[in-house]
Length: 287
Image 1 (cartoon, one colour):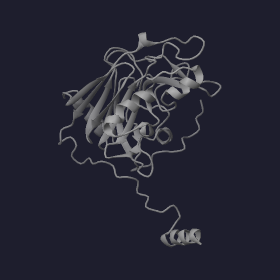
Image 2: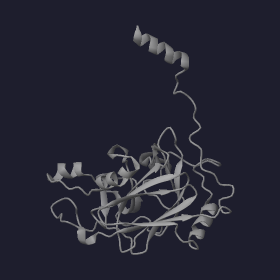
Image 3: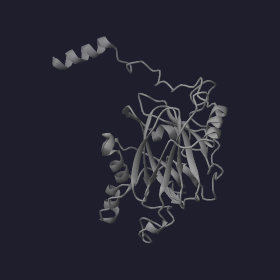
């Protein structure tokens, strides 16, 4: 493994510098709170829910190991949504406590900060696997049809599509995901691999909403990924599928004193274009 320095690094006072003490207090407070909202995501399905700014959300393995695909949007403007590739660059290909999930351009701000992860001690296993990845994206019926010739309607892409319809969103709004509880890495041929989920009943992934959020989660049809979904040994892994629980917690106002939602990116340029140039270009096209 290379010790070459990261391309993007935190500088004092930058948005990459996280006030860990504040988020520790947030996570500690959750332990003494009751959720104001909760729901269950059944196997091979998807659900969407809202998390107001300043609230905490937990994704919980309520019955056993299960991987899930998470999408996140600005509740008031779905054009702002999780940007998986930039989060990989700013935080890492796998995320855990105190990492942030970042939004798309031109907004570019943290949507959430991870406050607690019961799998944060998993680290790197002997195969190079890590947990909670941004390397891969959601399984989908298009790839399934291409690889198997069969239709299957409960891939994570389809689950997320059904989940967001009541909020006025469509398949075009579903985006690259955070694979929660999923153990993945790159093999010696630089190919993506997935391993059996290391979570057990009661594990959870917890995050603090930096802005008003709409979230959607799909319980992967592969369950805990211990049974191959594709390839010569593939079979239906429904026996290793489990539901997941969602819990939303309201934080006391006193605890949030001094905190505010992050502003959108400060860049106010026109990408090198100026009003007179834009006018000239429009006139040139007419001519």
